[in-house]
Structures are given as C-alpha cells and as structure tokens.
Image (cartoon, rainbow, N blue to C red; front, side, top):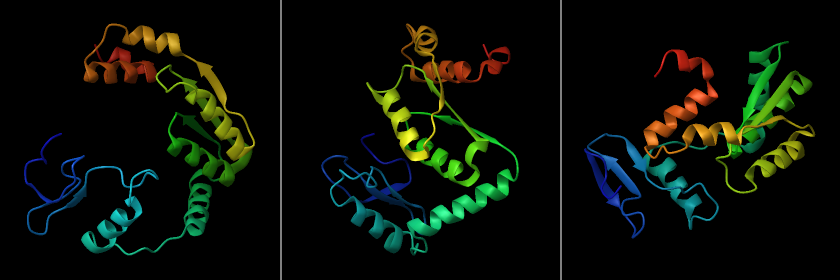
Length: 178
C-alpha cells in the first residue's frame, strides 16, 4: 500500500515503508504499519514502547513469568478434566500455544500437524523439531501436499486460493459453498 487508509493522517514515516506510523483524526485510533516486533527490525523495541506507552497510553503490567503462569491457570480452568486438540502450522504462535497447553494439561493434549505443501523449504521439519523440543512429545502428522497443491493448481486469484484452502481444511464447507 502506498498511502494510508482513508481518514488516517501520517505522523511519521521512513523510506520503506512510506508510512509506518499513523493516527486517524482527533481522539482516533493510533496505528503502526510494519513489523517492529521482529528482532531484525532496527529499533523495533523502542518503536513498540513509544507507541504503547506514549501514543496508546498503555502501561506495562506483565512479565514473561506471569503471562505463562496466568495462561496455564486459564487453560486448566477452561479444559478442566477434559482433553484438547491443537492444529499446528508453520507459525511460531501455534507452537507456543501448543507448548503452553501441553504444560497446562500434559498428555491430555493431542497435537496434529498437517503439511499442506505451502510452507517454506524445511519449515515442516522445523515445526516438528521445535514442537518435540518444546514439549518432549511428537505431533501426529499428515503429509497432504498433493491434495492442497492439486486443489490450487491453475488458480492465481488470492481470494480464490483462500477459499480453496478453507474448503480443504474444512471439507464440510464444500456442501454449502460452490
């Protein structure tokens, strides 16, 4: 995107992206457009702190220790004596969530990893290694590259691809959608 959305005014910018920090009219929503949270973003932590504390008025009230203990407590309360299933993807977030749930409920968690063929080279193996390292357990897996890639063959429209992937992930949706 080369300009901010309608109603947003540019407060600061850099060469790339052209408008990383913006805010809409008086009393409006503050916004940051880029990824300050990743380690390789120069001064990303400073940008986040400035945005959260000064612009959004949010004060830090958590630590890594209490975020994990609070999460484990909440998961145990939600799951109770039951079991849970977690679908893993190539994203770090799913691996962290699975490790947190596993810490909370142990062997009552079943994780499934479907390799749909759309990950970066070596990422499926990395997901499996990281999950075992984080939890000490393997995830049940399924290789489904052919199924997904066949379904996407010849499709170039991003919205069409999204719908096809959704139908492959949720086959029951086939009956209700063309």
